[in-house]
Every structure is written in structure tokens, then in C-alpha cells.
Length: 351
Image (tube, rainbow, N blue to C red):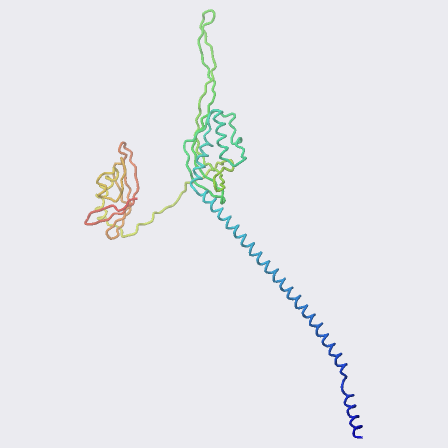
């Protein structure tokens, strides 16, 4: 009986427990589900990392390329600036004026002979840019005569670009034109009967007509950093460099001199300008100057302004000199710095 009751209890307990097979099946399903989810998450993570990495690479490449372009542009800009400085230094040099001086001489001077004119055209061709037609510089087919420079004066350079400029000249020249003039002469001849009669003859005489000109000439020039070339026909302009300017000379700094002081200075000034006009040997003891004038005879002076600073005087004077060999008198202006020591004067500076 006891055994039967014990057996029934064990059966009841066993019926309440899940079966081992069922538990193993559920466990396998959970493990399979976990692996599939893990693979999916891992795939997303790998793909995400690859996408982000690719994106960063694209951004990095774009930045690097942008930096390279900026650096290249900077190098090109610096190179252009360096070239511009090199070219500009040549367009600003004295070589430009020397070149255009020579050109103006060749351009203005026009010889009389045809052979010399052709040689002139060949020389002018070397001054112009490549391909420039120098045959239409002027029409000299009907001009009989010559043109020659008397004087050429450089005025200014107007820089129009880093490698271009216009050079301004004042040119004085004369044109000599040969004109044919018919003249009649009366000659006395004897006819067959021995009678004297007057016969008119027409002669053609060549006369030279000389005309002088003063013109302002503009020469357009370009440089490649190594040399120059004229770019086009020169042009003539007219400009007025004279001006009606109201001017007041700046006052001297110091205490105004007295009449007594100016009276004391006058004998010294007379002696000084006498020696200065002729470069007299006494000049070295009266002034700190290398040399004076030549053949200028001192006549008189006028003190227009004067001040004193301790033992120094500053004077503005008008001095009249006469040419030694003539009676021509001319007035010149000077400003002097004079020192005084022991009642002796000495010119420290004159201009």
C-alpha cells in the first residue's frame, strides 16, 4: 500500500514537469534566432562603417584638392607678380628713355635722297612691334626736301600698364622744302640783219624754304622684360605746362634782424660776393664752398629777408652780377647761412 501511494506521488510530480525534449527544442530555436539577428546587426554595422569611411575619404579628397588648387593659384599669382615686377622694373628704367631718344631721332630726321629714305625706313622697322607696317608712317612721294631735329627734350613717362608706357617729348625741328620757281630773264641778241633785240628766257630756279616747328610727341612703348618696341604711330599733343600760381615764400625761422645788424653784415656780403663771382683766392677764408663762379663781376645786393638765431644769421638776398666781358647785368637770388664769432662772419652754406 505504501509503495502504491509513493508511486502515484512520483507520477504526479513527473506529469507537472516539462519534457526534456521540448525544452531542448525551444532552446535551439532561441539560439538560432539570436545568431540571425546578430548577423544582421553586424552587416548593418560593417556597411555603415564602410559608408562613413567612404564619405570621409571623399570629403578628405575634396579638401586636399581644394588646398592644392589654392596653392597652385597662389604660386601662379606670385609668379605673375614676380614677372610683373621684372617687367615693371624695365619700363621704369633709364633704358626706356635711351631707347625712345634714339627712336625719335630716327623718326623725325628725314633725309632728302630716296636711297637714304629707304635706309631710314629699314632702321625704323627695327623699332616697331613685329608685323607693323612702317610704309604708311608718312607720304613723302611729293615732298622734295628734308626734315632734321634741332633739339629733343624728354618730358615725362606715363605708365599705362605693367609693361606699357607712353613717353612724352618736346621736339624742335625744321623742315627744308625745295621749291621750283620760274624766273624770266631778258637777253639782248642780234638778228640776221645785225639788229639788236631783246629776247626773254624762262629759267627754273630751286629755292629752299625753311620752316621751324616745336611739337610735343608721344611715343607708345611696350616691353617684354628684355627689350622694347614701339606699338603704334607716335601722336602729337598740345599741353600748357605754364601756370598762374600765387606763391608766398615761407618765412625764415628766427628773430628778425635789426637795421644795425644788417648794416654790419653788408660790408662782409660785398666782399664775399666779389670773391664768389670770380672764384677769388680769398673765398676759402670767407665761406665753406668748393668753388665760386667765373667771369661774374659783383655790382650790388639787396637783403630781402633776414633772421638771427644766437650766433647765426639766415639771409635771403638778391645779387646783381655783370658778365665780365659785357655790360649785361643779371639779378640772382641766394639764401645764406652765416655764423658770427668774435665779430667775424663766415658763410656756412649758400644755395
